[in-house]
Image 1: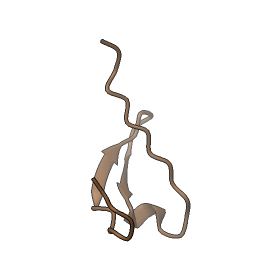
Image 2: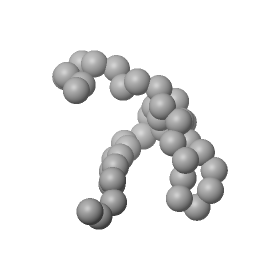
Image 3: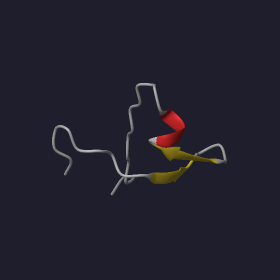
Length: 41
């Protein structure tokens, strides 16, 4: 769990429509909302 002031770790994510994005380097200077959905059970 990140605490206030912690740096977000560098991760690469596959996009649903294809391609990949690295967070936070590809999103520097922008607000970003990440939603992780594990699927229905």
